[in-house]
Length: 144
Image 1 (cartoon, rainbow, N blue to C red):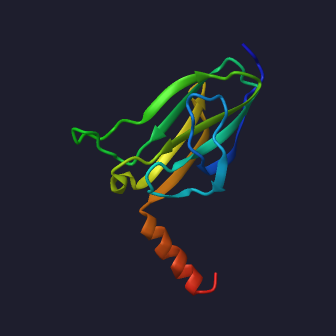
Image 2: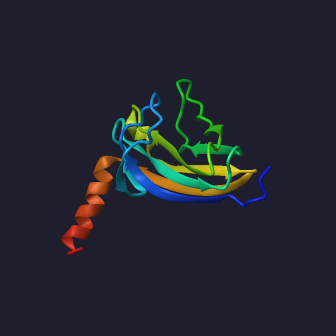
């Protein structure tokens, strides 16, 4: 195993084009933000650049804001493992909003961990679309 210390940095975070799980290409970066409107099928997350960690197990986790499943039970975090493919690798971690949109509002925390240590952590604030419009209008009215 490598004695090099892994170097992980978030290089893009915000809204992306739809992710194609059939393709090796990362989704296209659209807008830098942590404020995401709860719009059906909007894709958001981050791209991390991982250096000096080839073949190490990377654990990803997405903590949803108490979203209920079909039985009314709170969904557990979405998590899994992948192996770092090269010594300079980019990994996309993201999610999308599905119907009904109103129960997806809240903080969505996304993390990456190597050797049980969190190395990337980003929280997105998903809000109803009209809430952000009201905040923008408030500041715009004041000249900002």
